[in-house]
Length: 368
Image (cartoon, rainbow, N blue to C red; front, side):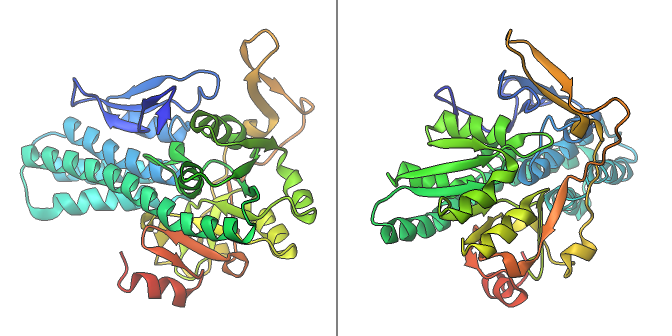
């Protein structure tokens, strides 16, 4: 996608230094656009933990490149053991998104062919690059499949504006390019379909306000920021035609883990007859899990994210303010699980399917 008219991905190998991976620092958005350098395994782990990079797809791509950076640090003797340990460190950084562990396993599998350290470094680089490229391609394909849904909706509305509600950021900033939930939106906007996006602020880290609104604005997509709790009201009054969210992990029966608050949107959508779609690449499926509520690990983050809010003050200075009494405790669960029964369909790079074990199996056949 483009930033101020210049094409960017969210992660790439530095053009003049193949020992450095560069990323867009998302903790600085929307008020500043900055690029950060990752030079070591520690840098990659830290970037994932502190959310310099975030979003299921981008976390996976960063894990892939983190394994490459680890290979540059790995000794020739003991290379395999070093890489396994590096993979364990990366996998432990954030527990909910399936893409992270998937990317680590993919690099380790590629390294298992019995190679020396020099070959291993080449393989790690090639695999990390492949993970990133496939992520961008899959998100583009999600957009094309989702475009059909929005085209049909526009036909039924006889050209009237389509109102879409999304939650958190499942845009190109959350992946390598295009995004998952936003990919159909961008494709439809570029095709000339009249649409508008309701953007949930997405407390406590406000990824909707700071990231989704920013990237939609960069692409020229009409949008309006709303409080998280406004979605149900809008649905009751016929102001939402469709909900599209992303996902951090989807089970083999279609249960969806996504940013906290997604479940409430799905309940409101069901009560008001609003279709609820979830967009994801195949790397987000966890085919080892059935019951998402019981089985998906839910990350609990630092309570300070609930008690403090960062932003820009009237003087244009970036600052943080405390929004509760000094002694008030807080809890901060990062994700919730939306049961498959509330999901209209899943949109992935292979097409659309019902959020059920039968539907997913029909689309994928053998597991990807």
